[in-house]
Length: 262
Image (cartoon, rainbow, N blue to C red; front, side, top):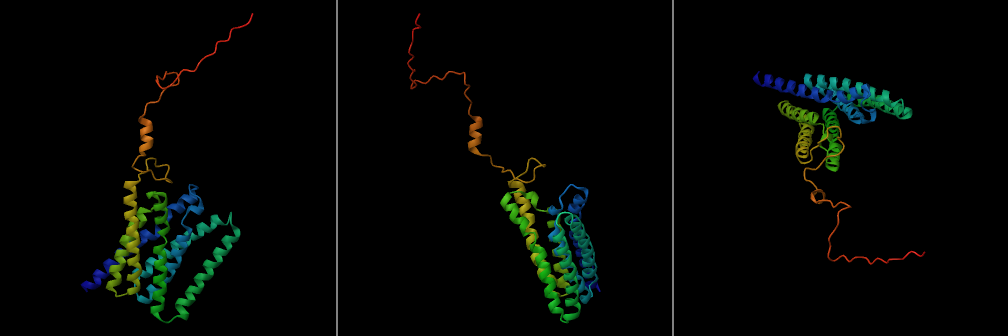
C-alpha cells in the first residue's frame, strides 16, 4: 500500500511538471495573436512533434492502465493541436499550398497512427518502441537551440524555464517508470534529463561569460573580455590638427620666393 501511494505521488508530480512543459508554448503563440511575434518565429515544428508524441503516449498509457500517462498526454495532445491550428491559421494567409499540405499530413497521419497503434499492432512492445522513439525526437528537438547558442554566443536563445521544467519532468518520469517497471518510459526520459541539463548548464555558463547589456538586443552576445587594441586606442591621447609637432627628424621644406613684376 505504501509503495502504491509513493507511486501515485511520483506519477502526479511528473504529471504537474509535464503540464508545465506541454503548455509552455502558450506564451510565444499569445505573442503571435497579439501581433508582437511573427508566426514563423513560433515553435510550429515543436508543437507538431509534441502532438504526435502525445498522441502515441495517450494510446500506450491506456494500455498500461496509467491514468497519469493517459491524462497528461491527452492534455498535451489537445493543447498542441490548438497551437498547430493557430500556426496554420496565420500560415494560410501567406502560404496557402503549404498550409493545405501540412493539414492533410497531420490529419491523415493522426488517423494512420491510430489505426496502426490500435488495430494493426497487437504487441505492446512494438507500440512502446514507437512511443519511445517519438519521445526521443521531442527531446532531441532543442539541439538546434544549443547549436545557435554556441554559434551566436547568446544565452537568451535557450528557453531556460522550459529546459528547467523538462529536466525535473524527466527525472520524475524516470522514477515513475522504474516503479512500474516500464523500460520504454525510462529510456527516453533519461535522454531528456541529459539534454535538458546541457541546456541549463549552457544557459548559466554563457550568461556569465557573454552577458547582454542591452535587453532590447537579444541577437548578439557581448563578450566580457574587452578588446585590448581598442582599449589602447581609447587611452592614447589624440593630437589636434592645429597643434605643432616638434620632430627633429622632420626637415623644413624650402620655400621659393617669387617677386611680383611691375
